[in-house]
Amino acid sequence: MNTLVTHSKPTIGVEEIKAVVDTLSNLELTVGTKVREFEKIFSEYIGINAIATSSGTSALHLALIALGISKNDEVIIPSYTCVAVAFPVLYQQAKPILADVSDDYNISVEDIKSKITDKTKAIIVPHMFGYPADLDEIKEICEETDIYLIEDCAQSIGATYNDKKVGTFGDISIFSFNATKMMTTIQGGMVCTNNLDWIQIFKDLRYHDQLRSFEDVDLRLKYSYRMSDVGAAMGIVQLKKLNNFINRRREIASIYREKLNDDKIIHPCESSEKRHVYFRYVIKTPYPSRAIIEKMREHNVICEVMHMPPLSRRALLKEFNRDAEFPKTEEIINFTVSLPIYPSLKDEEAIYIADIFNKTMKGMK
Amino acid sequence: MKKSDIFVIHDDAQFNKHEFQHRNRIRVEKGWQYLTVPVYKEEISINQIRIKNHVQIGKRKWSIAHFEIIRDWYKKAPYFSTYEEELRKIYEKEYEKLVDLNMNLIRFLMKAFDIDRKIIFSSSFGFKSKRTQRIIDTVRAVGGDVYLSGPGGRNYLDTSLFKDIKLEFQDFKHPVYKQCYPGFVPNMSAIDALFNVGKMPEGE
Image 1 (cartoon, rainbow over the protein chains, first blue to last red):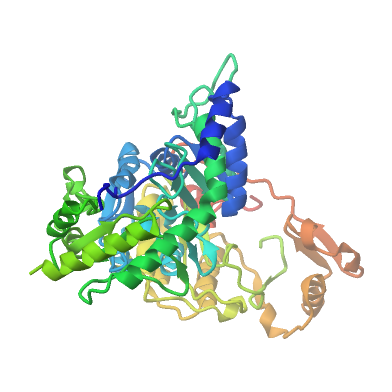
Image 2 (image 1 turned 180 degrees about the vertical axis):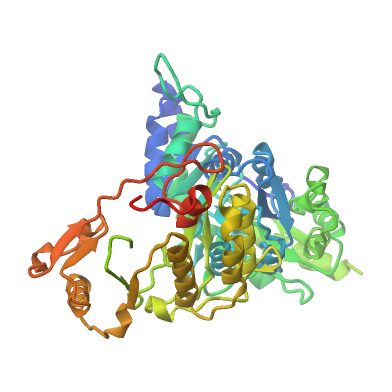
């Protein structure tokens, strides 16, 4: 292939460009009209209340504040996920306690159990690469041990668990609309819950100049966590296209599943009760990831090892996780490869990528 | 409870995981937290609900963990030490069914607050009636002439059915007392008042 196939790419059409230009032309930058409209249709899509934010990270930060997470509280997060999950925990001076992951790349239920202490206040559960985590088991643990469940749906909007959308199982869920996510607002996020008290907290704290009165007796810290109307205008269009995006991602995944035929590789998990939305198509091989990625690059295909370095190797988190081991995380970062997958990827590109990958695997020793 | 002559425990009502049948709130420094007894959640009567005794919190059995969490948050409360050993014994015992744990906790609180009332289980009557009629049948069965309902009863009781039995609603005014952390957080478990205020004088 003569042109470079990138690992990820936003899917933007003329509708998004028109929506952005219209919003700019109306001088709607941070008025809130488009943001409210986006929140409304997002809430209808997901099924619970939704508040738009400046990013998935700010959405997670607001979630932790609403749950009262503060100094020295422990929050369990996976050792293998986006580092953005750990930072809001640290903003609150709480302790991110890492749990290893399972073969499906999601947080391990068994390791969660071993990490719970009296100080555990919440578990943040990302649905990795678009595949739902074991929500029934995790929810049960949370209910039995009085721990809040935050679903991190940054990679998994539209995925379902027993025919119910992810993001509706936890006490709070968060979403991200960064440039290459399932859908984008350029940068942005959403924080969702059925708890109206927490919704009010999100509204109160996402903007530092919210209340206009001569005297403000509110002692809470406030933030600049609003989504712009321009981003929301784009989000409105993208959300309408989301089902098509997901269907296209699943079509590309089917091509990979059929064409990648080396019997030494392990494809992403699929199961009848969990609907994968294929934010990423990550496969396990018996060979070092780096070697495969270099070979694919020689053929103009960009592949990646996702989330390097993992949280378990980050100096910032070491002090909270001394003596803990994360064997599955180590296996993943050494032996997995993420292939290009996005709605605008053509069938012939996916077939080409699979062909090159098969040849690469044959050449590996 | 103190206002009743006979206290009927509605043990054959259906279990509801959203209510306070297997959990309650305790005061902590930054507000409050739930303590939830891990149970097999089924749509059956409360007296059939079984406890998941294998559940661990921080490598200890759930019940030991609950006692230690209570102890850690209330050890500075003025009356905690008075009741500590009795409460510990309740949590150290293993119960198969939730109702047995709950009854031990209720009896502990009755003794601590000096409440001496006859307790009857509604399951002993074997009534098939539902909702308001069931309450009326229960009051008649114990020879009562007044039913003292919680304030929430206004929302669900069919008041037209109360003919020979007088219906009264509690006028509960939440007392404010000194808790062992700054500020007052209402609607805690009764142990919060017990550990902070002790056995309250008659009539309070």
